[in-house]
Length: 229
Image 1: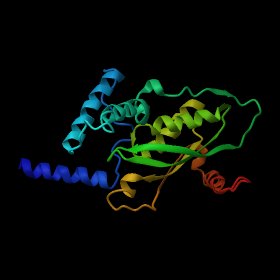
Image 2 (image 1 turned 90 degrees about the vertical axis):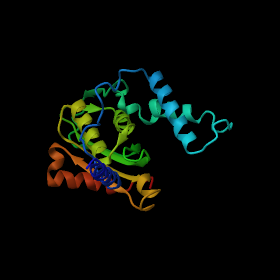
Image 3 (image 1 turned 90 degrees about the horizontal axis):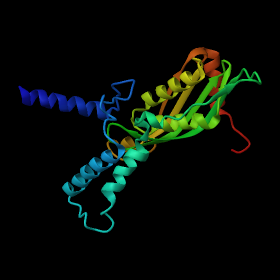
Image 4 (image 1 turned 30 degrees about the vertical axis):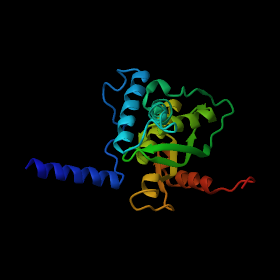
């Protein structure tokens, strides 16, 4: 019975991973996620990576490989997954909308570098974020920082899109925020079906952006051509 249950569980795990199904709208973190220091995390990950490479048969006495476990560990904690730690959340400074700009503001083509939580392979693409001011505006660079922060964690694209919108809504105090992400998943491009052409598009619309006309206007902005194109 245990063997059958284990097989069914393995099949379910494979199904979720291969189909890139997210099981939580929030990043699944344990309660004790930040009980140990970054230095301790780097040490533990370093030892784990060393074990993985040695298990694969790699010779870690080679000059090229000696520093790989520590490099990987440092990149995980300090770069690729730094968005897991709330202390790295950017301060989303807002300002009064003194010029009374009442139309939507759209920032297109914000670079997204994230990591698929199913295979720990890169997600690379662009985010397009928009909002309508309710009296406050946010610095343009802060929009990039918000995208970066939530990208730098193991992710599914749907959750990432939602988290960006929710963070913008909280910072601005309005529901009128939208985000569209178009990204390639290397877990699809480099393994599995190995489809190098496909990309995934996700969208989250809040407040006025749920209305047909406002949504259409936002999507039209994304198709605009500029003098630089």
